[in-house]
Length: 601
Image (tube, rainbow, N blue to C red; front, side):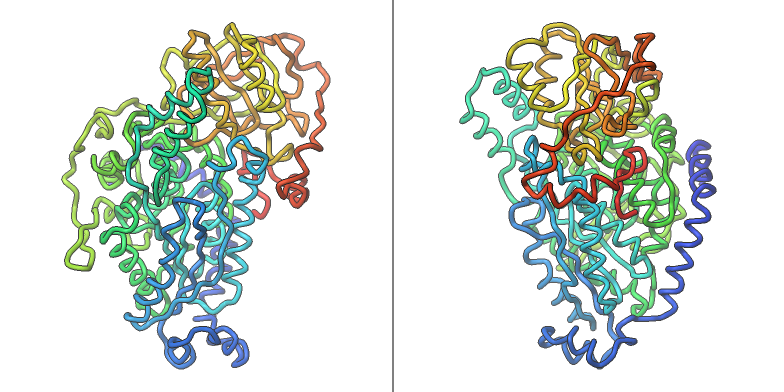
């Protein structure tokens, strides 16, 4: 298959720069594989402890050679996306048992809801939870009694943390089983409008609450295309989901059949199942390139620019911001899903979804076909979609046509010729901007800076009506070392209102924005951050800043900027309460945002 030359070039660069660490990683995985099924090497006492609670599966585990699946679950019933997982372990055990194997819950991992913690102190633990999840999953799998792993997780930091663990235990085959999105509620644009009206005082809190409850109203993933649904896309593009599995609603016959099929498939992929497919072979350099292409073609979450480098590093692969930028420049935007459009992920799936998209991108030479997936060799299997055949699954080829070109378009007529994310560079450092929902006439903003050091200060200025002219709002000391790099999604309605008033506004921050953020130009993940003396710490009110998403420039235009002293801030208030005092070690040792803001890798 003919590959786009830029995809080939970027892939080669990643392979070359990663070679020493990738070779070392694969050598470790080969050594672990060579030892065979791990529980065979445990003492009788070790095994007795491992099987003591297995009830009817005790004899099978102790005397037979069927695969034993370790389930890592992020279930809790506060997250709508994870509530359906409550019944999955029993269901998986039953399917494994019917097919000559066994399954045990190896461990649970924390799963916080960013929707609950937006604008709250708990959000300062959100990014760090990714590394905690990786550690917790590692503890679960360290019992060394498993021949394969099933990961149950969906949302923002959960999937990246689980991938870091899956890569670390890369000699084990693994599959990610999604729970699916909730059915559609009120339109996302209507919800956003009511949020803006609340910000300006046009509606009261009861109207806001009614709208929010009508939007987030049942089991399943939130239906906008934020980080959670970008994660689901990523797992499909990288071959760790079953084809077409990402956006099937929970508690439906098709969803149950996919869970059963996935359980049987990971058993087949175990060393005892005849088609050994270790995760380390799936998580290759080409798979990560495919994931980045999917991110750009769908206009996905900026959070994955943080997560993908950390995920890749766990597999001995080194991604850079330049890789994202180069791939984005040549990847057409094929989807318009809220906040980039009016449709939600249910509408996107009905229009043809990921199966259509993968086919289009393969035909255009923008995806690597020659990869290993949980289905075997070749990404072309992901052109298919699942259909019920009795109680089982049958994968069928899609039509090759979009069912709604207002939502999903072919490569020849994209919504825009390049992807949704772009790198920004200049004398302020390096940042990312999501432009898939930003109007073309707002790709360049040049305006005086207004400096803030908390979200609350921005909200106070807005409520006091003190932002009345073109402004670039700078919100600093929001990076990983300062306070854990919380999302600043609570500023989205304010920024949108200011823009709707006719002002030319933008955001510059060393923090994050939600994967659901959209139409206001926002330079985020700015690195180096203010807490380590980055250039953003030298800014003053009134400094002229130019944000140019067309050329990729982020510049302070004042001539004396470079000679100024670094400003500091009292961050002690960010380090106490809501569990934040437990995370000093994380803040003190976290890496740069440009490298994924990681602690454990």
